[in-house]
Length: 335
Image (cartoon, rainbow, N blue to C red; front, top):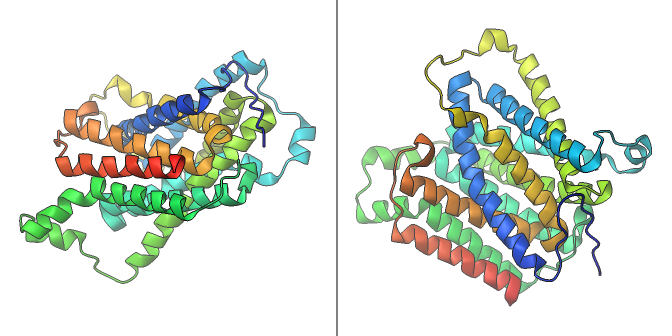
């Protein structure tokens, strides 16, 4: 099957396009943990995760609106297109907000390690299923035993990279009793939160596929990213108004760095990159490539203490986990 990729001011991918797409996926993946750190700083300054998300989405929407005007000369979408296309085509931004909010809810319940692992599991499983069935008009790439093995290697690599140091400390007896107690499940209902984490990951992969097809329908990757961000911004405006910000939000009046306002730009580039990737390499592979970039970005932030974060030197075990992930990608794509 031949895919015709429509673009505005973006160059078409052909010939060595898959390698370029992989590079784009790695770059936007590396930027994702940076966006998370930046938005965390914004949340601290504004006093609310929802208000911080709204500001981030709003800045990203404004940036993409300008880019869309340059690319398409208009922000409007024709009514015939709105009437003839399936309703789910316009819900990518809503799915993104649910995923973002889900992570906010998961962190205090599961801790940082499980908040990464379970959504990642959902992302990979959903991505492979979407490709296998061609859901949301994604390019079909059938799920085989070899691809399944590669996905398992990627998940294993994620677990080693994220949680390997903690496991090693437990085995060697270096972890304190308090650390072990904090990471030990206290009640059975935590399984529900883990399942919700997987579900949130499924929504994230679905957003990637939906936005990818939206870019094909609109004939503009930039406009598709703009529509997704606009829907997310409107959703967050409703949430913030329901929460009555004047009564609930308290701003931190301490000195704030200038870079805490650029998270929305990174988020916009992330969504735009995903819209660009799906028609070229499929949803499942796009999710996995971005995931590897995310792990690389997280390790770089830990190693060098970027964005005012504490330095946490990368270990050989974490590098080994990253290598396992890369082997998994090779198995999925080449074998």
